[in-house]
Each structure stands twice: as structure tokens, then as C-alpha cells.
View (cartoon, rainbow, N blue to C red):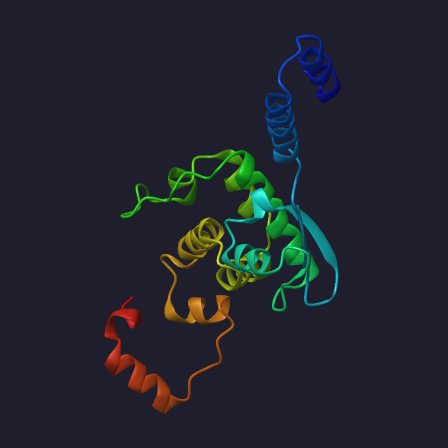
Length: 194
């Protein structure tokens, strides 16, 4: 029933005024609950993105900033616009279809055995390696555990079976000096095993 129809019905039945008032307030409250609370996110390069608070609240950063002042935009100072757009896409999808928790210990030997939901598989598969690292960093900064888990798992499988030199190249780590390498080899022998 719409609000106007309800008022007419109550008036015709000669319902006491305080009951009409109570019902009216209840109907108004129910109508307002359906309205979205929009949060504006501002990337480090000053682009704005909007998200419904219900979708964004899994982010610690968004939730805390919104609870502090719901009328102010949330500055996401460490995330560029391209990455923040992907984060918003993830949050909106997660709100409608939450990702299943990644089991520990891992229940498979390849990424797609562990993450069975196709959308989440495709979300990280379509991204370049640098974008995955950007998403991982953004998830960590924004406190988005499911996105952090997903991107960490993707990186884990990219590094699995790689040599120390290959990992150094993938992670864009600088070459070690001979002294640093000798120290690392003595302190972390397992890393350098072939």
C-alpha cells in the first residue's frame, strides 16, 4: 500500500489519531529504509566514485569515515582512480554475491580449485600483474579482507614454483649485493633451494 492509500483507509475506519500517527511514522520509516546511503570516494588523483554504504561497509576505511561524518567524501589517498574503480566494482558485486571464504589450509593446488565462483576468478584473471598488486595494496589500505584474501591468493599461485630470481623479477625487487645475498642465503636457506 502507498502512504496516501493507508491514510485514507485509516481515516475511513475512524481509527484513533494516535494510532494513525504511529502507523504513518512506521510507514515513513519503512519507506526510508529502502533508500540508499551514498558514499563518495575520492581517489588520490581526485576522481570521485559513488557507492551505496551497504556495499561499501565491508571496507574498514569507508565504514569508519562514514560513521565519523556521513556527509563528507571519503578520501582514499593511496589509491588511484583506475584501481579505485575496480575496488568499487568488487564491493558492489560482493554485496550482491558474497565471495565464499578462502579455506585454510588451501583446498586445492591451483587458483580456480580454491576460488570456485566464476566472477571472482575472472575479476583477477583479467587483470595484469601490476593491477593485481595495486588491488592488493588498495585492499590492505582500505581494510577489505575478502579482496585482500583474493589478491593474495592470486599472487601466491603466481609465485609458487618460481626460483628466487624469478620471484625477484616478478616483485621488481632490486638485485642484492654479494654481501646481502650471502647473508640472505645463510639466514633463509629454504628460499634458495632449487
